[in-house]
Length: 212
Image 1 (cartoon, helix red, strand yellow):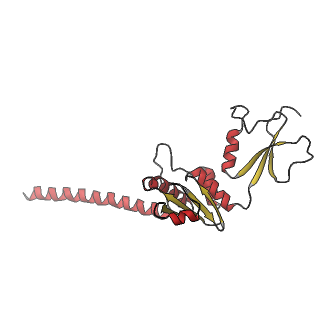
Image 2: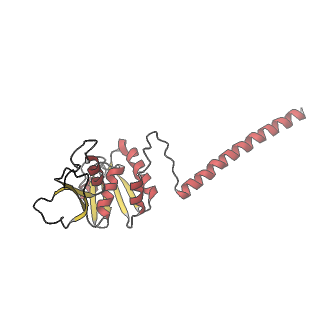
Image 3: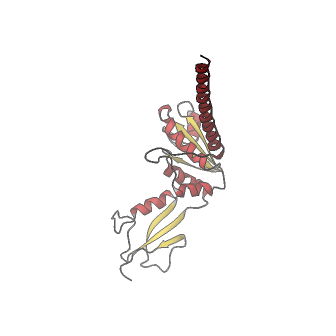
C-alpha cells in the first residue's frame, strides 16, 4: 500500500514538474517577444510580413507619424492588425482607432466620409487614404514626411520601353505604378524641339533605345 502511494505521488510530482516547466518556457518566450517586439507571421500568404522597402522607410523615419482610422465595427480587426504590425516595426508610428458612427465631428474635421478611411498626419501635413493597406499607408507616410515630390522622366521617341505599356517584354507600366506608390511623379519625356532635360528632373531613365 505504501509502495503504491509512493509511486503515485512520484508520478504526479513528475507530471506537475513537467507542466510547470512547459508553462515557464511559454512565459519566458512571451516576455522575450514582448520586450523585444518580436512577431511571427504564420499566415499562409505572409499577410503581415512587411516588404523590405516598407521596413526601410519606417526605419528611416525622423518624425512621428500619426494615423487615425475611422472604422466600422465589423471591419475593425483587420485594419487594427495592420496598423499594430506597422507600429511594432517603428516607434515613430502612432495610431488611433475611431468609430466613425460615434465621432462624426472628428471625421468631418479630417474630411472623412467613408468607413475604413484613414488620415495620416506628420507635423502640419496630412493626407487621406481610402482604406489602410501596407501600400497605401507607405505612400501616405512618404507624402507627409518628404519635403517634395521627386520627378522621374522616362525618355521616349527613340524606341525606348514605354511606361504606359503592359507588355511583358517592353512594357514598364508595373514599374511606373510601383514608383508612384513610393511618391514619385513619373512622366514620359520627348526631347524633340528641346535643348535640355527639365530642371525638375531628379532622374532621367533611358531604357532600351532602338535608334540614336
